[in-house]
Amino acid sequence: MKAVRLVEVHRPLQMQEIPVPTIGDDDVLVRVRAAGICHTDVHYRAGKSPVRPLPRTLGHEVAGVVEQVGKQVTSVKVGDRVCVH
Image 1: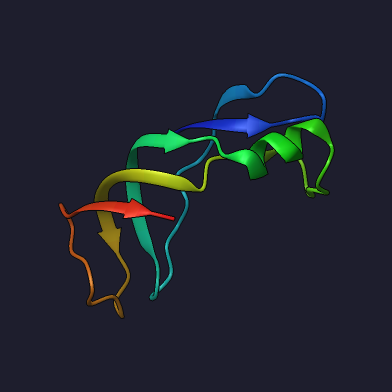
Image 2: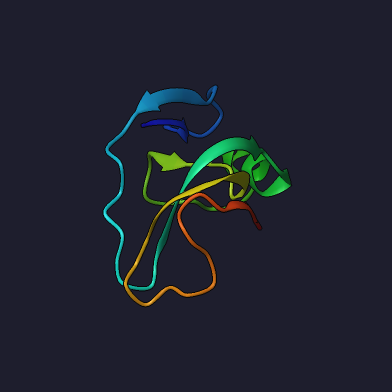
């Protein structure tokens, strides 16, 4: 999957190919259709807020479609459109 990643502070963000995460029983996997880069992400890149380990995938405000749900998840199902903050 593609991800926007912070590889080094004070440097441009990079689009990278990374493995699709394996979900646990309480997890939901969302195919992201839109992601916001907020002030937190900007502070990480600028070195104003500590962030480790690097590289780090940024963009924690997303909208997309549920692709997988863990065994214990009952609040959403595959195919649901969701926003995450």
